[in-house]
Image 1: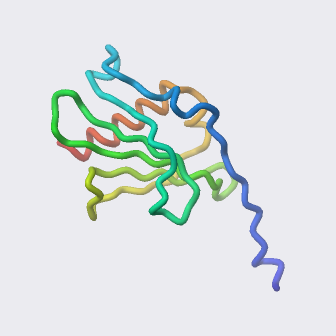
Image 2: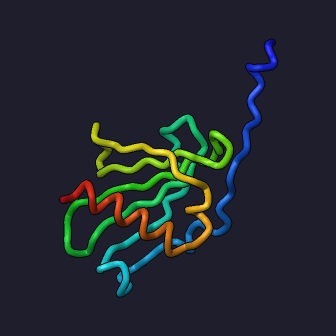
Length: 116
């Protein structure tokens, strides 16, 4: 095995991911965020939340992949449910996971962008 084939896998851990749950708060515009555990349909280890509005019938999901890529970046993905081909995926800096409010805002912004 070549030394280049050895990958240093660093994994993030979100303690109490259910604390990101939101149920009709003033800053969330009646949106609901609910931690669903891991999405077992993916080969990557992850955290998954379902996101929906009390005013809309559309639902979405937001997934944070746990493996850190390229120093301090990791993948997030989101889409509408049932899962469709318009799923989005992008790198974010792990610093965006430091504050609960930033994570919730990112989730809501991502899902709102797909519903419009």
